[in-house]
Image 1 (cartoon, rainbow, N blue to C red):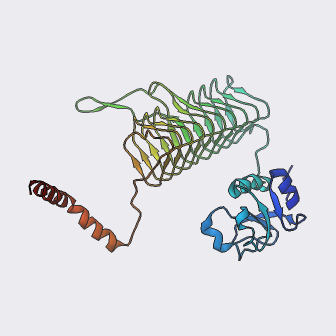
Image 2: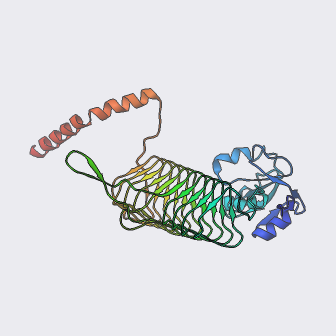
Image 3: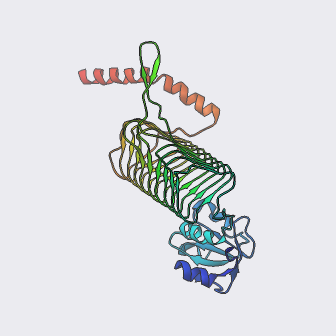
Length: 344
């Protein structure tokens, strides 16, 4: 059944425990940004950077905090966390088509695979020997579930995803198109004049309610498994190397790379473009700012780390680099002055 596309503010407030300021009978038929919404749309203000757009918004209603109500020209839904409230309401308007519970004629399913009830298998998908797919899961077009891989209940395996042999997913896991889970890690030993491959004998274990972005790669473990605990969210184009462990409820933004055997704690936030060295620990609830490179363990829970240098006008950058190139000479001069001062 297609989602209902009209809700009164009173209905939304009751369903999501929000307060209404304005006409509670106002009907909402869509969602949008403050800048682009029309009179029947619902928008939100969660970031102070967009507060200047509030007074000019054409939205019929806005989700916001109590302190922003007086500045809003539209009806309001008041929430302690407007972005979270918007995320929950937006699901009511998500009517993207979902595959029917059927198996396409061109799917290749091994006779020893075990399929749950109500599953969908798309065109040219492959499910290998001994693989299992849980009740209500979707395996979309071109996806490969290799030998012995296990997919839990109510999962969505996107188009052209590859789950290599022995990979295990919990329930309600979403894997976006093109991701590769369980390919060999980068294990090599140098034998005087050539490389020899180290067999990657572990696998990948992903907990319940995780989400893996498009074209992300998660390597299988060399001996033990690579592990993502429950409710880990990984963005597009992330590389997670062999034997990494990521704690529950952590989130990792796009283009981050995590080297082998790193251990990431619970509730950790890693922004985009970061590099995490191997064989280090990151404590629970740590935040790492965008473009940072983490070379050693972070042991203080809740700490925020940043090692990036933001872009600046080219002449400023050149001047700063010129100073940086002289830093050794300046340091020696400071030591000499300190020593001479000590002798006086």
